[in-house]
Length: 162
Image (tube, rainbow, N blue to C red; front, top):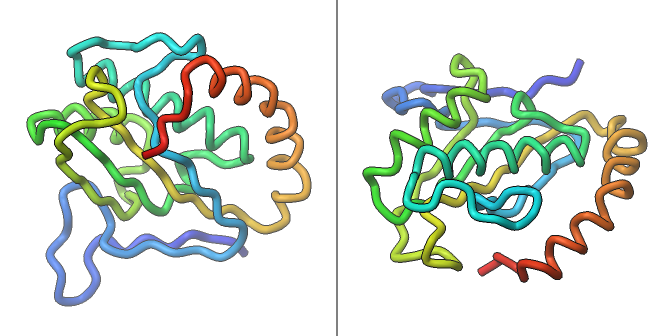
């Protein structure tokens, strides 16, 4: 049986604030690039609003995971990048709305001087693991179906990779 394992507090470590200290799984690893608050048309969602941006970021993560045949239950690691530590409660609220808070993924939070565009307040990337059997069906078909949309979005907005 396939199962991702999440250890909130291994022996000798105090529980984290909404994250597991260790998570692992076996199967196909999915890496989702840092997502920012752009909608499907490339428009910024929530200018100067970290809550709206965080919600859009997690919606974008959901869409990217789905394209690979995964969901938030499969996520073993999240990394948050915020331009101000006061944005972390908004990011945590958006995260907690989509993950199993009893089995949270491992997480890191980093305060950065800025993101690729100055209007971005939040960026989040993810690692997920799904059963290897899923790779031949769901992920491949979904990835093929989204190739044209991804190419169009990249051409329109340019890469957000640093």
